[in-house]
Image 1 (cartoon, rainbow, N blue to C red):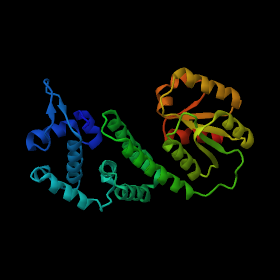
Image 2 (tube, rainbow, N blue to C red):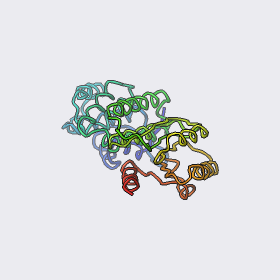
Image 3 (tube, rainbow, N blue to C red):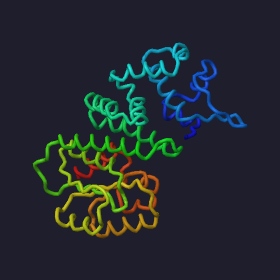
Image 4 (cartoon, one colour):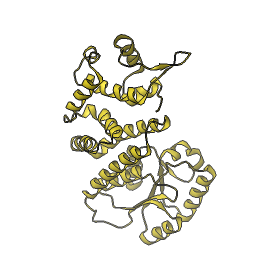
Length: 294
């Protein structure tokens, strides 16, 4: 069983630590363990309880009323809200879908967001914060690999579905080439880059996960792309990263190289002279627009 600090709950449940402390003291809604120095620690069960309480509170239930309910009654009221597609509840619903591996809840929440604000805003405003929350759960050991794979594949499936709805641009010369290097399998961000560019009418060629370097070079030679985009999330040796992009820059002879992802953003000083950093999807479109216009 994982242990969370109150700051972890603040991020995961979306409620201020100060508010959690007040709710505990005044209403006794949680009962954390305390160290000898009075540092609180919370369990998985208490995390789910707090998420449920926050969901009810955001939907008009007073905290004083919620405090009188049993865990079973709270759960029943939460599930009665699951059919209500209010955007403000999406964070809690996505987390509950992750914890319970509930495909229907996850799909319905995501579908409603996309129908209301389109995939671009859904990704930046809801999925990225949700993935950040998953990252915290990984760090404290509260999420199982099966849960992470389950949710990641649902997100991947949805982005691919949205890509498939986009028209293929009439001009297919000099496409934008997207790929992941041989060690990299995390493609959600790259898939979203692919969708984003296609939605703006830009022709893309998507090579996907773990692309062998020699094959990448052959593809570049064959299709003459206007630029290439990659994403690095998996931790690698920094000397390897530097050598990789140094060689890539030499081999593509002036072709713009866009690179994003956690490893690029954390270690930009290592590769800054070889690439154009992608800090966000908005940043990608901004960079690309400037380059494309030029």
